[in-house]
Image (cartoon, rainbow, N blue to C red):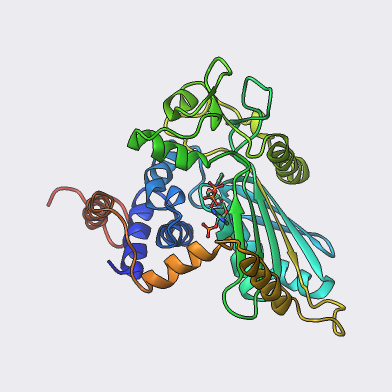
Length: 351
Ligand code: NDP
């Protein structure tokens, strides 16, 4: 199916469930771009969560993010309890202006939700020649080594750097052994993961997705090293932005609320600032990537995703059931909109 067609339909579904159209468009593009890029743990699979979280009343589907210019290189945004991507889109022009002017700028977003693949919040800056680093915290679901309960979120970190030979070099990784979305996919498929992927409710190492989901926790990748990355993400997101730490995020949310109200931070650097006499960064990134390939690294991070995007072109792949679900939800959205008076947007009474 065509990517643009899928975006249009998902946008209509999100709008019918209560998202304002500008917000629905950003979320639809976000989740379908992840799907198209083969990042399926944050693709169409998440649509049900976008719908249930707005239906629960926990998220603001029509937010007005408040952007504050707090210092020459510092922007703060209150996302108004909406999605962080909507707040980032609002802050983006000021962030870019500041990064170009000062050589570096940071945006700290609070009172926000995030259900997406984080590289999508970073790669656009690298497309424009900047370096970008994005971090987001989430619900506590990750235990550091030795702990018997979760303290951290899955806390991803995404990094994007411009290259001269093609699309930016991007990596995007959770601080956990696997993303929560991938854990859910594995549980649904009845697939066991390597032992030590997480702990069960008694704190014992396990690779059983069901046991991890049922009162257990994921482990950090690389033991204490991943735990320190998760720690940094908590400080950069919750600490710096004034949001809840992952372990503080309230559990008593309305039924269906599938998102956590946390924070996101994005740092944007202009690699050309004061570097007139130095070799240009995009070429240097290419040199490094070539050296890695030459040394035998089989896969440069981001290449799988870029290949998937290239191969899909204007089309998008998803399994038949997922497409059928979108068609069904879209048909229901159309029926609902036809039942509304086009002028007042109130339900039409019987003829
Ligand atoms: P992966 O472990 O699948 O991949 C992490 C990174 O490593 C990617 O950049 C990937 O590149 C690269 N990579 C994977 N395998 C190799 C390899 N063999 N050699 C070299 N590079 C490799 O991702 P995670 O499971 O850690 O995270 C999945 C997604 O979940 C991310 O997009 C993340 O943002 C998202 N997430 C979102 C959260 C939220 O709150 N919104 C919370 C946690 C995670 P490539 O992209 O090319 O495969």
